[in-house]
Amino acid sequence: MSETLAPSARTQVKRLPDRGRYDTAVVHRILDEALVCHVGFVVDGHPVVIPTIHARHGDRLYVHGSPASRTLRALSGGIEVCVTVTLVDGIVLARSAFHHSLNYRSVVVFGTAHEVSGRAEKLAAFRTLVDHVVPGRWDSVRPPSEKEIRATLVLELPLAEASAKVRTGPPLDEEADYALPIWAGELPLHMVPGPPIIDSRSAQGGAVPDHVSGWLREK
Amino acid sequence: MSETLAPSARTQVKRLPDRGRYDTAVVHRILDEALVCHVGFVVDGHPVVIPTIHARHGDRLYVHGSPASRTLRALSGGIEVCVTVTLVDGIVLARSAFHHSLNYRSVVVFGTAHEVSGRAEKLAAFRTLVDHVVPGRWDSVRPPSEKEIRATLVLELPLAEASAKVRTGPPLDEEADYALPIWAGELPLHMVPGPPIIDSRSAQGGAVPDHVSGWLREK
Image (cartoon, rainbow over all chains, first blue to last red; front, side, top):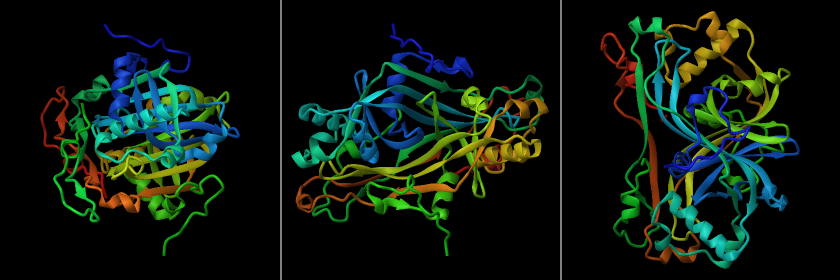
């Protein structure tokens, strides 16, 4: 039995509503797979969208805030954000130009983000962020110094007002178009790692650790 | 000799300014490679960020507006947007947690988007969008009907206030950390196509066209 998030006026998917998914597990899975998110906020009435790293911890979302730290720190009372994550799974090639599409999974989260300020909670958030990008990495690296902890801004927001949109499968063409002699189908896309590149300044080669050699994103 | 865009107060990259690139060719290349963009706009004072398809035509950016057509159409006088595009090129594994990063290329465009309304211009925009996703596709598919032309919302905005941010290369660790016996380097990431999947409703198999079998995004 899966929990669902009640759609709010904003997260209710208006166009093509059958693509809307409010299932918590679906929302979580998309957030967990995506490497980056796009954070939108309003500055003096103007929209700003910045890519950054995020990580989910239970029903909270951490967002690495440093790319916009000046703006974000100024709003110490919390900042209203829209965090959007998109995974492109393939290209949908229809017989008509109109029905071309992408297969994708996206999540939109609305909420008020606050700075994570307690030292212990901040450290836990860093661990969550690093292990989100490379599971298992945190335990093998030098932990942050006090200065580094202070220098890093992490925001958190609840995953209360969130929804997913998912498109899968073949093109959906107009009935009359199926007879056209036009190649139609899907071109799946995958995010795959190339061979790891050791830093040329590494004193010793050393074996590539499993969390690097075995890194695979798709679940 | 490459043209550059003068940084405005908003596109001036404040954090890590050496990562900021204002070179027009760099901005264009990133926009051309990315399959999706994230469009941010303000609704009743609240930020909204929606993923959609974009395509560049010279120094204009087309944005497929249908995912937010209700909101966007209401603003017939033009809508202020921030369009952000991000390509993730790899994971940067440092010796310290703090210096972990991603290699990426991103572009942020600020501007006022207007609906593309003339029939001929709209058709040209559709072609640009379809061929942006799959170069060469447009000429092999059924062109849009008048009804389909009316049903599709395309926005355009000038690429006047745009900037790129690029990170490449190995981790940059604290000098003292280079001696640590921690594997450090890069894990390059690539967006690669899998084998094309023909639509099961295709009357005849037919050879996969070159624009599908030869599709490759990285330039």
